[in-house]
Image 1 (tube, one colour):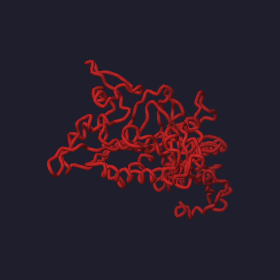
Image 2: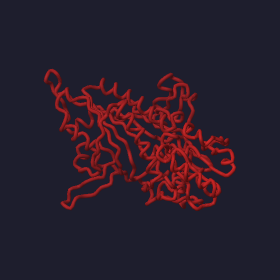
Image 3: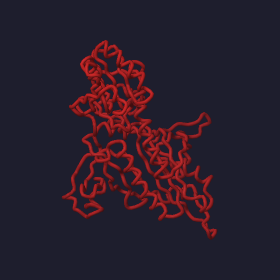
Image 4: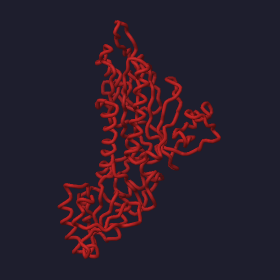
Length: 410
């Protein structure tokens, strides 16, 4: 794509009042625009990243977890929350119909998905069922901070599973751990993300969070580097050792982290609230067991930046970069060759051609800020060698590649 045609602008200065690194960089690079605290518009480059993260997530939901994608409404009747006892949540955005019926904006979708499942689940033959969506959520946070890491409106993948018994739920829960591990590896933060034991509340002894180590994190976790698991600070007094190997709290490393996902065994809490049952092989009525599995899509995008960015700007992992290559030409002769290369390769590779009428130094600075994986530079100097200069973002060395060999290289 030609950069001059992208609806975006870069700025040299950090936006006022924005403390979080992820938001500062995304706004400076023209990936997002702030409407108000905790509410952002995603512009073309930012939206491309979101869509690529969604593609990584969908692959695991569809293939590893064999789930079906649906799309549920954001407006929910308040009486459904009264059934589950969650109508007093302080993060609910409340509204009403012209008729006076009370509604809330969805902060999660248990109150919608369970009545939906009740219309389809009657017998053991109808189970198990796995349903997921990628949808905006709304939470009336008292203090929306940390950029896109904590929003009042945000995109989230939520998966809900329905099972005949606790064993089947447990088996699927273990599969979800594998899927989540794959997702975080594929978006480039696998080495920095730890499965973290957290309080299971009224459902079970533990739930599990997936926490990415970064100084921008709001959570504190205790790491066991041998087992690559952690314990959330909120339960460390109860679980004062590594749950895997038993290593004591004094040997665990205390780190700040961002929660990028969580998985939870709901058991029968929500199915009981809506009287969701099934008939087993013997004709007996049994409760449906449930699990839920969430990933904040925008939060994941912000976490990647907090981990990978440097002093010059963003560094996107290849899997989720808005484009793979940034093409820059230096000089009139090089510009003509760049036009030829762009026209030749624009359908073959994911390329952003900086054709703007800007000084070369500004183009280079913007390339570092935007942070595409590879920068391709054509100049009179490289043309003398019938080559282009390719540099990987975050690395100091450039590599000369013959133009004739470019297709095989990329």
